[in-house]
Image (tube, rainbow, N blue to C red; front, side, top):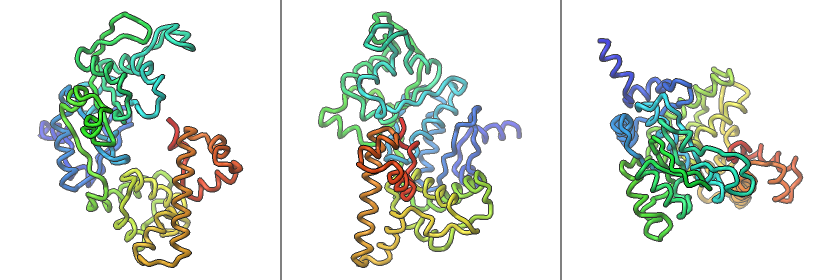
Length: 350
């Protein structure tokens, strides 16, 4: 019986995840559950179980918001390296001239501003796992250095000839099909083959609609506990919207939508007015394809504002004052529009 219990604790069965939200099982409490019952997600969970105990390099493919980092966490915390560090690096968030130094470190004087020796993320991840997110944005020149460390586990800090060794498992993720980038010469073929020893493909939420209700209930329970609003429920109209929306931002968008609804709700119900304006417009447009001119115009304007504000915040890495100046708006007006569209500056910080 004890052995059976241990085996169950070390697996990621879909039913356990679905019914109990797969209680966080990392030692430091940072692991978040993978919730899903759709056959495509069950295959992903089974593949994680098989791959995690190995040291194999894994490439995770999926749209933004599908849960690639959750998969990387699961691969690490279910591996023999679980007691070592897990270092996440967003390759798209760092400028090209800093990315090499961040990954491999540098020595004093390697470039202007390098006043001390500094280890890179690969050194910091020794005997652990490094998660290279959005690796499809990595510059070609740096891809060659990454290929070397994958082949030999050897590297040198920027500005140094000293060869160093690290024992690191590499898990990478991409938003796009890297094979297309290889075809047009924007990604090294040999690096793709090296990374793609094992591939995990995450389906977008619109292709596993049967999981929407499961995810919505999980997020509702999580955020009602967090904000001490345990009595909250979805109104029937909100349930209809949640089940029929396409979620271009995938699971992350659903989570943010429900979190915002929990915060705004005043009585015992999350209503459609508590959803982001773009979702309300989508729901109304779906109900009446030939909507009134004013409503259609309002939806277009709201979507433009969301896209424009997001672009400014992304360009300034979440700095509201600089983003407002870029948009030509007073900072208070910019902040008001952010609140109106449920945009958070922290979402755009590197």
